[in-house]
Amino acid sequence: MEERPIEERLREVEQRAKQCTACHLATTRTQVVFGEGNPRSPLVLVGEGPGEQEDLTGRPFVGRAGALLDRALREAGIGRQHVYICNIIKCRAYTIENGRARNRPPNQEEILACAPWLDAQLTLIQPLVIVCLGGPAASVIIHKNFRIMQERGQWFTSRWAPAAIATLHPAYILRQAGPAFDKAYALLVDDLKAARARVIELKQQQRQQQPMPPPSEEQQLSLF
Ligand code: URA
Image (tube, rainbow, N blue to C red):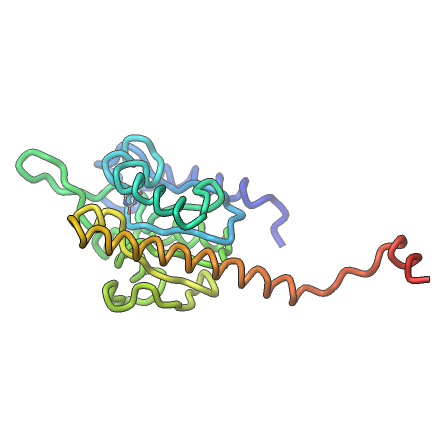
């Protein structure tokens, strides 16, 4: 059994990830966006990949999609500082269109090249619940042919957690307008609330399964 605290072991993985050259995104990134938050959290959120702001700052979900996610987390009663947030790929994937960089979904080669980092993170953290933000994350965490519109909001098991759920990606929600935006945003909040409730339920189950500690001397004496 490894004795070093999880924080230290995760930092070590992060240091190695920062040197990664396993795919061509290493040549265009500004920074590796490894992930951040509480590594002892029972709840982990997994997104798709860094965008422009994330690439510049080295932190996940700090751009417009991040602001919407923060709002939804607050509304669902989840403190961002209490969870751990990362992505399936750690470097920004983009194309140049009309002289401007546009984010694009990661391809299979990039996802596979990055998989060891995600695996190391989730294996160390051992969350009770994983929330996948968008289809690409759900295809990695839940099952390969995940269909986000049909399967979001449902519970699955994952090799990294006893419970996993997928919700709409905040960037997708930002592309909706009017009532479509409201509806999509409400689904995100609902799914985050469901994740929070599931964490509470699983923690309660864990506590019930733990053997009762032997009574202290004081408790033993009070029996007489
Ligand atoms: N979108 C993601 O999927 N991840 C981020 O970190 C930011 C935007």
